[in-house]
Image (spheres, helix red, strand yellow):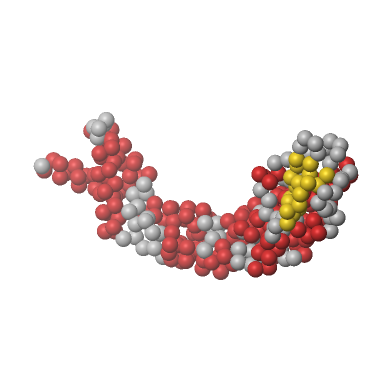
Length: 303
């Protein structure tokens, strides 16, 4: 589920403080005597509470609904226990806002949000559980819906099952849930997507030898998340025929490139062998290379 244009979460974000690290400029573990609340400023996204003693000021930011039920008020003298409670509410508010901010930016799994909450070291485990439960109850975290949407979008972008599965596992999604929505990587649908991917992946490969073209195309499919077997099946069904004229053009071009590279240091048979090895590595057949090299040699002799 996407939150970027979700009005319900925007409303929540307005009512839940979006805190920054700068807002945490003073929080104390132990406080001096004579504490009182100097000022309370109510804003759309936070209640800013300033606590003072004779020498210092400490600023806390609370979610508006937490402040509404907190019982704190301006000029109130507070005890050690009340100060600790105020500090706890402050850290809770900061963590809650961090979660809301992340969910507003993108869909997140339960595992990813749990990691966000773990990074807030002042939270108790009970507070982490409360925030996580509220996010799930409001539908802001839903692993099942995330998996469905992610697979639909990824398959629409012609990614294979292996890549999709790996990405979801990285998000902390259980493999059983992934497999319940992801079709088998040997399915007909997977083959059709791989064939469609061939159409876009083959662009820019026409300057390679036919063998290198097929090898590079298969590597692109595997990188996109298709299994090697699916990649071979898809390429086979595409029935790419070898264009002999294009093969000759590419061979001549690569020969010239290799000749310029190696002729600076080598000559004679040593040069011929290095050019031959270079062109074979690029997928050109030994017989074709030798035939062209003999033609080239005859031309050089005629000149």
